[in-house]
Length: 504
Image (cartoon, rainbow, N blue to C red):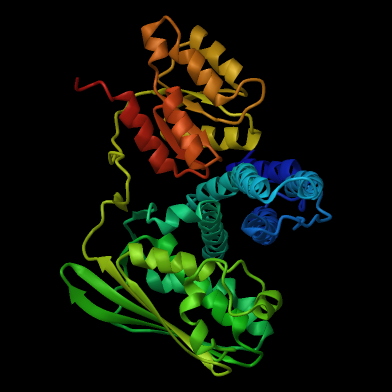
């Protein structure tokens, strides 16, 4: 079986596991593309439903206790969450009605506070579960897309199409992260990465994402890029993608049929080792009232309720990109006239020079940077993971580094493997059947054998809440990596932990 056929089998297994559907029967690259495109469309559908659910949850959190979550025809994990939450709301409604008839004003106030705390807890639990359910298949999509992009036999068109899937998945991942922890991004606790990227190519990929909508509305969309703009910039291409994606999305959304959109990118010179880029997105859309311009950057705020109903959206996009731009030491301005159009102007600085691919800015992040090194050794890894797709993905990633990998499906089997075998490091999923990652780690840390009890353990989980990170640390887990993970980051962390005591 060829590598292409192996990849196709894996992609089809993802469709069968996640969506009970296989689209193709051939063994060509076109079949791989169709299967991956189907996955991308399913994820996009989940994203839209997730945005609706988040909006409902937020309204409930704000005080609308009887706001039920919508149930779709998909009958998937999101619908299970929605049904469970609606049952909780029914019980809450009954409790509120009965107690409101019996209790005093002071007692009512106390209970309202308790209910708010319960709703906050329910919201956090829901978001945590949703994170796991969405990020787990997304880990497979992005991981296998990366593997396919590494295939030197790909033709230019196929690579371009995979690039579309990759950038859409990356943006979706960022959106999921930001929605799950808006407080984190508001406090600036996000990480920026410095890597070389082609802004012109990135802009074209973002434009292509909206091409069908632009053509459908017959919008006159023109892109102008200053010739002085460097061919390669050093910065966080994913965050730049997110900024462009949000601004272009809004422009397309609010521009009427046969309207105009202009995207201009200019070079604003160099200063103190930084190259300054100015991005302008101008549309002939519905515009923003002068008294509402400042409010558009507030979370969950849109110009009006009619706007929200007509154009959809959570009201988080501009809030998030303004925070990102601020953390990037840039600025964003908006000019608008009602029924005339809107212009967003973004100024961003990019470090001049050759980047080292390292983390360049992380607020409240004390993790030590790690450089990939070639040790030439055969590191033996124990992988505890219950999802078959993620098992295969991690195995393939580790095989690229010439690591030996033994895989088990739950924490109990992981403990048994450690007792009966010798490993250099453990990759531990958190949410597993029979015994979870916390329990397995606690047992390993209490073994009598000093070598086995001190084996490095890396949590590899789709749950990304702050409480999970704290729980990992308190349990004895050495490091936490979230899914979807970057193969280079996984390699670096393994090398660091395996050789941690070499210089002692």
